[in-house]
Every structure is written in C-alpha cells, then in structure tokens.
View 1: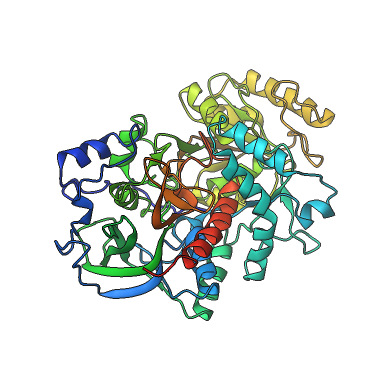
View 2: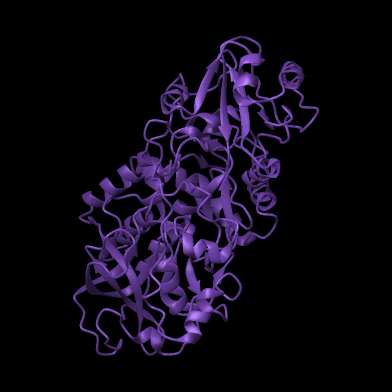
Length: 524
C-alpha cells in the first residue's frame, strides 16, 4: 500500500520552468485547457540553455523509461525483451514508487482462479463496472483493452516471479472488491503488498542487465525540429521534489521515452489548482514523490492533459494516522462484512461495497469521520493487530461502550447493528443492497472493534492523453512521435473514479504495451 509519509508536498517551485506568460497561463489553467502552445521555449534546456539541435548529450540509450513502479518496470522489461537498449530512471532514492506501497490486488477477467471457483465473467461485464465507477467519462476503448489483456498480464506477472496471496490450499484467491459486480480481484498478500510485484520485476530487470537508476528526476523532454522526442534532461542526485537540485544530465533516447511517472497527489500546489477543496487539511496516501513536474514537462512538449481535476479519495482511511498507514489493510477487508455508521445518527448511510467515489462522498456528506463497527466473531482477514498497535482501532466489551467512546447514540447504534445482523442472516441488505458474503457472521458477540474512517487523496485520474498504443497525443489528437505513457501518468482511462484493484491491471497492461511500442520505433 502507499507510503505512510506525513506531510503533503509543498509542490513544485514556482521559480522553475515557467519561462513565458503564455506557458504560465496554460499551466495555471491545466484542468481546463491541458496544453501548452509550441512557442519554441520547449527547445530551451533549463540545464544547459542549449537548443535541441546543438545540445551536448551526456548519455544515450534507445528507450528511456521514467519511473520504476508497475508501469515503468513492465515497460523496461518488455522493451529489453524486444532487443532495445534500455535505461530506467527513478526520481526517488528507492525503487517502486507508489506501486511498492500499494495493496497490489489485481482485477483479472477470465482467470483460472475464477474458473476454479465456478465464477463466470466477461470483458463486457468488467468494462461495464469500470464505466459505472467512472461515471461513463472513461476512455472505453482503453477499459476494454485492460479487461481483454488482464488475464494474460496476470499470468505474465506470475512468470516474472511476482507472488500473490494464497488460500488454505495454497492457491490464489478472490476478494469481493467494492464496485465489481463479479468476483474478479486476485488478492495480494498483506505481507508485502505491491512490493511482491515491484520486487520481482526489478530483480528480473537486473537479471537482464538493467538496473534502476535512482535519484534521477525528469525535468524536461527534448524534441527535434520535427517535434519528435529525442531525449530528456534529468537531474542526477535530485533531492526529494526539488527540480533545481542535483546535476543536470542530458540523456538521448534514440527510439523513445516512456513516461511511467505516476500521479500528483502529493503536489499540494498543483492539486489545489485542479480541486480547491483538497487543501492541506486533506491527507494523502501517496509516497512523497507523487508530484507534477513530469506532467508539466509533457504539457510543455505539446501533450494534451485530460481529467486533471478528477482526483480520487480513498474512503476507508483513518484520520487517526498520517499517510496510508495501516488502516486500509484492516478496514478495506472489513467493508464486505461490517457496517459503516454515521457518528451523529448511529445509522448506516452507504453500501460499503460500492465504488470508492460513492463511498467517499457518503462519508464526506456527514461532515465528520464515520465509524466502522464489527466483532471478533464477524471479523475478516488480517490487519487487526497492526491497527490496534497503531492506535486507530479500539476494542470494546459492549456496543454501549463503543457508543460512549465515539459519542454515538447508543440506542440507535444497537438498533442498527441488530438490523444489519438480520441482513447477514438472510443474505439480503434491504437498505443498500450490499452483497453479503456467504461466510459473513452476525455482529453480536464481544469483543467489538471500532475504527474511524475519513477519506484521503489517493489516485489522480488526470494525466496525458494516450491512444491504444500508449502514444501520447497532442492537442490535435495526433501522436507526439516517440513519446509514450502508461499507468497513472496517462489520463482519462478511469473517468471520474478508478474502480478498485484496476490500477495494477492498468499499469501492467499498458506498461507492457508502452515498452513494446517504444522498442519498435525507428532509431532517430
């Protein structure tokens, strides 16, 4: 899961890159316009002051991959497998980006895990679920591509050495993820999460002779006179998110550049320009490197940016810890089995297995953190011990004790839990139509457990516009030659809200495509 860092980034320095009022105005209004005009300033290298035609290159490769999360690692592996000379850089001092801290669950259609459980699924059903969660603002063709390639990509991940959680029989298992109408999410282990994917992929790259070069931050894309991306300016030894730190290095990429740079959830200044509600009082689950400098570089190179003001909040987070923390390892699993209650009324207000936007919006509408209540007998999955140690989850001898602790109306809480128990017994939620798992237990025996929930910034739906070959498109919807993007760096795929467990699928599917297509480019 994402990193447990405490403070939102102060954002990208205003002193950097904005070298003309036209570009500055465009970037300030990125959520509306999403592009920068070709003024010629994109050919001025901040590091050297030289034009693209006479820049002195310090390093050279065929494919330059920027970012070492799911997308970047997958792209680098595929580009190397295709015979390209690959360089992969990472701005932070560790490999994996947000992916290394992610839950790592993966939505897969038509898997052998579904077949073993007798579950029938289809690409159409998968796409429909994504569109519903995204309020039909999604790039439907992209969604279909992700669904179609989900199983072959999961099988590929297993071939690459990635590991997935196992049931009591030693087999991968499925989890009823919110927003999915069919069980298709293959679970990742709580012990390791996304690092069970990024670790093996980075090891595979090492075996192929490619090492992730850390503390190297992209600050500028370099284009020739025809507009083809021929390289990048990076800051070697960059410190955190400071685009003026480190040594400027010019890297020539003779085939292409792949942007796998993630989102901008930690970039407070930039995200405020997209959604003024998300100020510094709203925490973020992302690792501290999730900032917008690479998106700005792509826009200056002519890329269209889309959906930058659609920023997903993760609903099952605790306000009693900072960053991602440990809450979601516990609360997300309980969502299938336990009710979420308004503190003021003691009543449920949402289907706990709806998509993340509807869940988060329902909590936000109450105006204060809500409370998830369960008991030892009804508890599901792992994470309780760590949640107790973190002080976000508390144990009670009775519902009355829980009501007093959270300042909830005791009678209303008792009545609501009793009503919910009838839904569990009858396997029918009469209030919100939440699917009740077959193994769900009534919440009626102490000890009881409670945890407060309050949403945090989690995923940016906005980024550069790409086609099905992961080519970055300009304002005329024409591909920018030799520039590719995948994962959270690519916008518009998930519409208003990404469906849970689809990020891993998206990143791996499109990362692989981006690497393959970049390697197939003609040498500049």
